[in-house]
Image 1 (cartoon, rainbow, N blue to C red):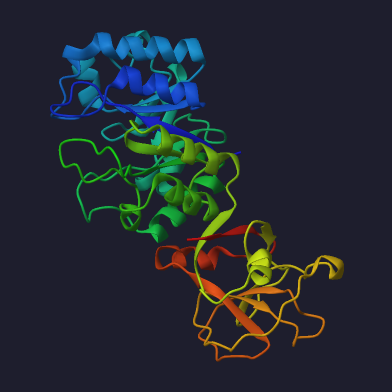
Image 2: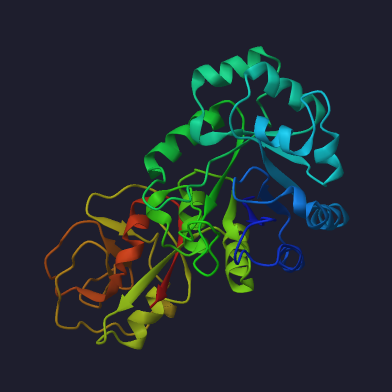
Amino acid sequence: MPAAGVSFYVGLPGPAGRPVEDVAMAADLGVRELFTSLQIPEADVRGHLDELRRIGALARAGGLRLAADFSPRTLRLLGGSLHDLTPFIDLGVTTLRIDFGLEPEAIARVARAMPVMLNASEATEQGLQACAEAGLSLPGCLACHNYYPRNESGITMGWAERTSALLHRHGLEVSAFVASQVSRRPITFEGLPTVERQRGLSPARAAMELFARGVAEQVYIGDPATDPEEVRALLAVAADPHLCLRVRAEPAAGPAESAVAFGRLHVHGAQEYELLWRARGAMEAEDLPALPPRPPLPRPRGAVCVDNAMYPRFAGSLTISKADLPPDPRVNVVGWIVPEDMVLLDLLTPRREFELIPW
């Protein structure tokens, strides 16, 4: 089952939330995955170790996994070594995310002491093979994509999909980041997503796409998780990651056709269709409301439609246009997928569940 996580940071200048209180809030809501970085250049981590220990104790008490970015700089900062990871364990860190600067042999050595996450965004076949040859057991291991604080610097969805597919072939589980739209981390305050085009999306909607595309089994809010509603919405998507597509309703649509489109979970048909996405089957005849025809409208890509009474046998069937289609007097346009959700349409694959929400 997909999982949702949140991030926190200690020692940053300026507003960065209240880490202990924010983590406690997220844990109370049901979050079991935490992420932090101990190597942010602007952060005074050493001056805030007590705060980090309090969060680590909270994580231990609640059975939460606490992952932390790890590099040679982190070792110098906390005084540990590849042979002695006690400083991290004492802080409550349960998993070390290997950011950069370690050779495969060193990664394998660290993994013998505690669980590690590989850097998913930079994974290569050659690098994975080298880690395996060094003794790292890849099946069941973890990998986590980078986040990108600088605006316009995030990776493409295609790169995320390809690198995650590579990791999945080797048996790894993958995590990724989405940006908060409420609380953004210093120093740039531009969000912390993995995929650039998701920088302006809510965590829940961005995570929905990452889950649906198979990019990640777990999604963290990369920025400090200060807003309970963002956390709740992300948890809800992880618990039930079916596609939710928002629809700008056609004002003339009547209650009967709206009842077909909205307020229910649809399942796409068992095949791919050339010109339409089609919900599987039609409503049962006894449940079918009267669906009189209305003046036909053009059906551009993303038009949500219901077949009316002029379409014998198919009346009540729901479709979404894949291409720009002409008006059809047998088809009532109920609304249009909102522009921000058009990127999700190609994820309507055979037998996928989806929901339409009037917006």
